[in-house]
Image (cartoon, rainbow, N blue to C red; front, side):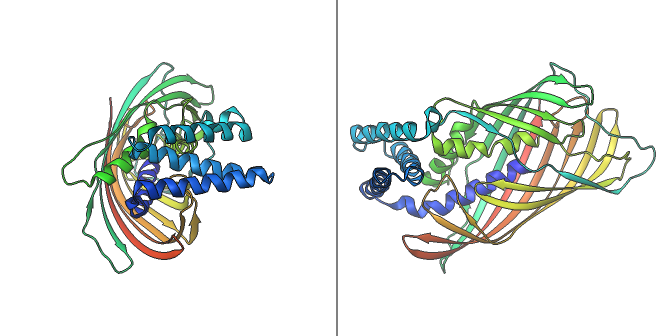
Length: 382
């Protein structure tokens, strides 16, 4: 479910940025070059921290510009990219151009047993073996309805998203902690009829660099994350580094958080967690019901609610754009299974409805926006 929120949040904020993409290439480049000049001026005055922020913003914007307009003054754009990379390196060291690690720091799920369920009851615990390998395929489909000011465009069709993740258990420590390695083997955005080209390109830009991302983690035998580290490709740029940092939340929550107590069919428990993604922070509560236990296979169904209050959003995908979230709410339901002999769930599905109310500062003008997103997720491990 954290992955689902990350996708919804990313797409929502990308949609917010689409009006800005209507600029002509010359206007876009001039805006980026203005930021670069501001960075140079700050650097000359010795204000290196503020200059670094501006250089990163210009680098991020210029790289996106280069992807969107590869034929526009290619030599000039390439020269500016090199110049900005040199500035980033000199001000922050070699890692500033986007290499290194992203370490997990997301909140840990807090579980509470609501009903123990019927007899017989037992403590459900994961018990994979070292060397165990799994692959998970996740498919997501979305629809968005948006209202900007008084304008209410028709529903927007989104391209499908498919993520493939491989997991290998490295060791199982005496107290039940599981160490593992992960690899995002594929991340694709499907080309579907009826999808606006700028929508598809924005999503491809956001998710394209996820492929090949590797990580390590430690999980308790109750499916609760203890540590996550993410290895980023050496050529990762600053924007993608920040965006892919959100993916550590996915690695942090690969399994259903199981209750401490012994449970039986009909048992209910809740898991509360604070989520952070794409600059937003919200509280999530998931309520699980144990449907059956057959050997190592535990089937469950769940509901989830998400709530976020008023807050300012600083999103790496849209540097310089000021967004204030007024409120966010989400409700969903799904079903799935847990294979206690493995880490990844064997199968599952979920439907989620999220609503966002926000205000954006675009060119000094405040613009109110309301958005509704419907998300369907299907996943299966192999």
